[in-house]
Length: 304
Image (tube, rainbow, N blue to C red; front, side):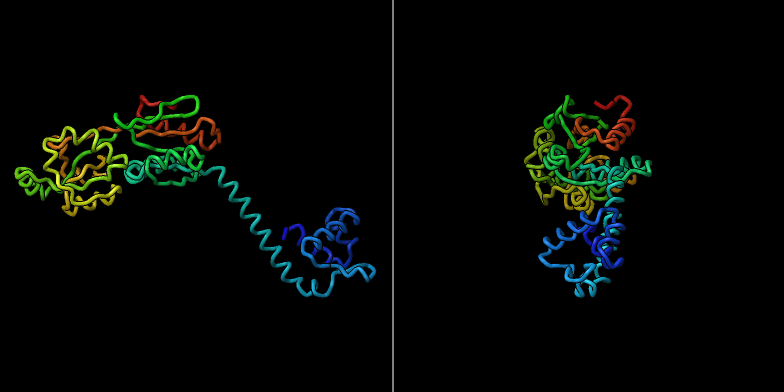
């Protein structure tokens, strides 16, 4: 039921006649009569008792007056809420990140962006392919992704904007108190590791850029597998095995000495953190955030 229909019915109920109701609703009486007939046709019910002069609402409608008033009030409140939400959406942006970026780099970036108190940010987490699909489908305004030498991202072009936010390293870490046990296992030809599924981005980086240079790949003994870097960090901390994690994710643990960086022995990989957006998306809020990301990027970076 449309709000304006409810308000038409209430106008008749409250004024007692079609003529007075039409005047309240700022239309001519013939036009208002046609509107009432349209409501009746939609409902399949006659609302007016036309045997009376002037025509009045039937008793069954009058009995529902309070209910109609309540429904109309709720619809007005809903309309007001939706319009307010629409205004809020004009200053809202969706950023999709690869899972590892969501937990490592994104929080600090969002904190900086939220210096604009009028800005609302929805942060999504997905794998690389899903993030890219969300961008192409306009379900995300900006995506934050990793790229490596063997897994590059599309360059900036007439369709795609790109900002390089800085470098990330994928490094092997292990609890410092257990290093002697790891060294002993390595000397005996066995290194317990937590690995990524081979089909995910970090799994591909591992297989293509780290393992080929590993001193003795046959010594690796996978103890667990997960695509989630936070879960992997917990497994490492528990001593399940060594794992390659984004350096930014374990920076505090390295600084405190809880974890040790073993990249001089076991190798690491360098990745770039890249922001992408569609150039055809010219929403002012997206432009504003894109410019801010460019300012927060490395001095050499610029929006492309």
